[in-house]
Image (cartoon, rainbow, N blue to C red):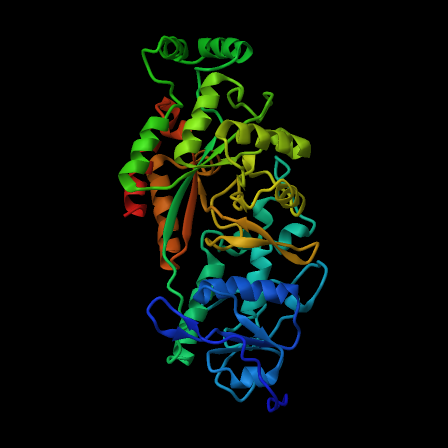
Length: 459
């Protein structure tokens, strides 16, 4: 049994925190023998969800013993104090990257791994770190057809919890446990559910505002599409709207529901197999970006080409900065194509502070098992960074192309994610594309289900 009696001058620098209701909240204290960047990072992330600040971490037994608030003992030995005991698995005191034993099993908190005799039934701290750091993506793994980390190899997919924000649910259960063990402490931070729509503008217009080469190619394709030639003539003759132009409709939707969306613009300078955006130097595209930058938050959608040429990302950011007249600090990778840690290091070096790529481009779900924004942990460098990651759980293209869902089934899918995120009072971030919400017959019914869902999520 460890000696928990010890004398002398406990720290008093972390006093009670005043809450909005003029009551006081003592910070939750964590006792740990082994300190390090992984544990400090995890205490920060969990603390932000518990009560809006990092957990107070100490290796001083006297400080822990005399702390008036809620206690979590993260060591190999239980104490005699009223506390929540979590036995370390060892991941947070390690350095380096190696394969971990992650056999999952059910518990009161749902799935869990790193199981042991903790009060929670598992090392919650190590499990949260494993999921949020994307530890498994640093290990040798299968790639999909686009060279991305394949979701089929992830623990969440293999174990069946990809479609739930499992880390958030664990932390919510910890909140409940803290409230039961320390009923006199107001330890529960009341987070607020947030819905934020985001849009990737890959191709702003299907027929209009194309250069000569793509205009000619489009005419040729229309000959072989049923009704394609007639539609193209009507659109170019301004008798019908461009089928991808949903911008005014979205403006009205945002105004009606007081939404604050984020638009990510693909601004590749040259066309490619995966970069088919309208020319960013064209007058129409420049006007579109300027108009949206004046009313909404905008970010860069780095092209496929930029993934192979880092200097191209800097050029595309410069183009968006010039068009918008604003510093560019938000990004989301085109095709959700990124590799850890390389892509995030490049983005941070270019001044990006917030990235919205944390999700899969091949299936919907919670890639990092959380709905909350969280700082990126550079696992190779063993340090927390200031780059904030905003995870998404749904993308229209995944439902349509990868999962083969029709509009009705997609609406039910979105309702499922809404219910999950609402339950933990998290952040619901979704990706839509303007061409899904226009008048293209290929996407008939998708505008209607999006409008129906927004009515639910924004109320």
